[in-house]
Image 1 (cartoon, rainbow, N blue to C red):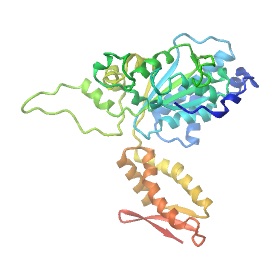
Image 2 (cartoon, rainbow, N blue to C red):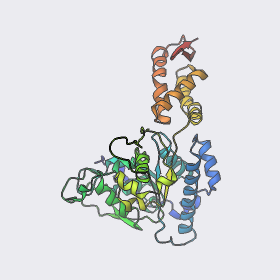
Image 3 (cartoon, rainbow, N blue to C red):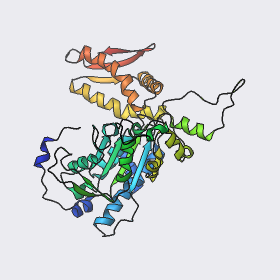
Image 4 (tube, rainbow, N blue to C red):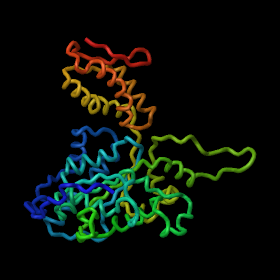
Length: 380
């Protein structure tokens, strides 16, 4: 269970600013303008996913304005739940953080799904997500209800693929994720839910209700192997015995799940998810593996600039020749871990330069060059 924040007791329940004022202050950008802001903030690639996410963010603001400024009650059963699936390092959670936390400026919670368990077992209950969102909103439950929750590593909640899990499910320890899935069923569809404002650490604080009709819930996960599962369900059965031709192929880590495969709820069930839970998501967005051009842009405009600033703080000018940049991109593609692979390939090279030259006033420029198949350091 997460440690109780020390400042939780100091939260003020007096509203210095009404929710209506906060919603009125939110800037209404068109989906295209939101997409442009993503580019300005350094997000690269994923054009289809960006369009879907930009519309999602726009609809979130418009829904808040209809409820709090125009007095229009939300339509029943119109909760905004979205599932982002795609390879690791493809920018799923980064997109959520940029959209809701930086561009929209609403309370935003990004939480790891692996820390949750069914009520009554070791681990956090899913309702504590509302507790954390409440904390992120400064103790204003009405403002928290205007925010967004992103559950990362959602695919790690997949249960065993054996139907035997249903036998005695109430009497065994919740280690499969099935109990968490059942708990999410209500959270993703209910118009309101109670949550422990003290994170459930005491029994003296009564639960508080939170309206969920305006809340946006996004689940993110890599779902490695889902593409193969969908292909097995949609393909032809293998012929058994002598002369059979196997239809199975080598499984890659970084693959895009097609729109047709996303529609196969049976594939998600085979993967280990309750069909009713997948049905709670009104939109499923598939992210593509990042290609060489996108990785090169991320390396140039995001990763290298951060390291250039760090070297500049040490009085050094960092230069990376184009051949080294291409070398880093190719290593990242080989790792199949997306943008994370860029840092994994680059950091060991920079560590050597930092070890030798940080704190050395004799050197003013550090240049990474490609020497055969290895990266070398040249100084002047």
